[in-house]
Image (cartoon, rainbow, N blue to C red):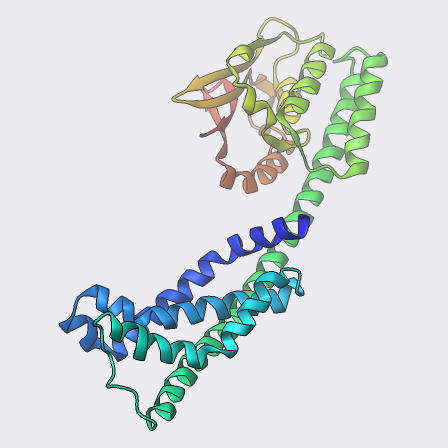
Length: 335
């Protein structure tokens, strides 16, 4: 039963290539037999090309079953092979018997000399099918190879960037503990262990819910800063299942703590909002005067690179300076 389901998914992936082939064949026939659709109705032209389209469909399916599916769908393969072998009598019956009985005549009544002519037409149709299948296979093999290489390169890049980010975050977390920016207790040790486990496992992405849970743990540890969390209740349930780069949101918190004024007077604000159906996550902190010309931390560059592939999934990241004294990060989950 699993093999049957797998093959159905396989044919779903091939539907685009099949549509290209069937369209190319129809266009070719329309060019070669222009008089049919110029001087007759579209229905007449369709009756004429039905055997070609049907033959192409069976050939396309049979070829891919033989090439990739290793005869698992034998109940489709066997009839397909039988139909290909018996194509000559079927085509002869269709054009010279079936259609003529219903008043549609494309050719003169059958004569003994027509066998060679009909055979040549069938061979030409077979030649087109073989040519298309060959070009289609070569083209898509090269395309899939390029895609796999590209995916592998992106995966390696993500792992490398995530490892750099994890190391950077771990070092900053250690500095926080050493400088007493966080209370060093068992909770901090557990947090260190979580980061180390992520580095070891090379988990480049986690569910937003997991990242958010540990982010709140980090907020609880930063007792020497005032950090406000707003709007958590506005986040739809399905958003928590979205993927984000590991430690990315927490790096923004680390950056805000590192580059904001010492003390608890000016709060760091973490806010969730719903804007035109998009779920928005923001971190906003005041920039300490001695950090105005130092930038906002190298961790942000790594986070930005890790979020690049997620743009295809309608996830956008933006950074901005507000009122020349606040730094804001905005993560937007679009519909």
